[in-house]
Length: 139
Image (cartoon, rainbow, N blue to C red; front, side, top):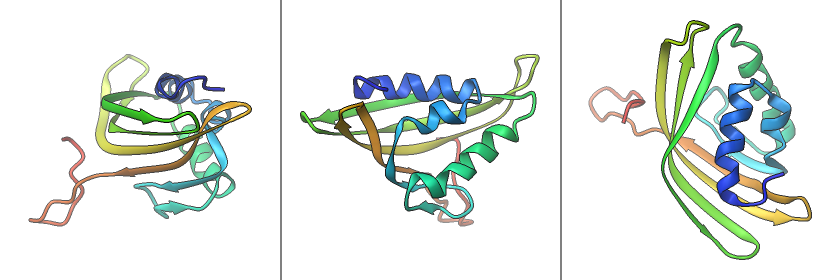
């Protein structure tokens, strides 16, 4: 359970670092709308998105993923909230070296219920190069 919207970012980092799909998915409402960068790109609810998250974290083997958030801005009322910024993923070897990384834009919409704040909408994207139509993952 996240008590404040700010708590989401720490809980997300910890769940991914621990490769704990259950903890990560608990941050999201069952009816979350997810716009992702990978594969399908759109998931209409948590049930459809769950296999992708589980596969991602299970596929890491002995690697870990360090997540950092930058430039996060939060706006909220008593019942809804909104946050946006940048999210950086770094694959870390067992020896602690960075194997690969990427930075994306993230927008997250929250609602509050009896169990605290949950994500109702998430959108992760990257700008596209006008020269070669590829995603720019390092800005």
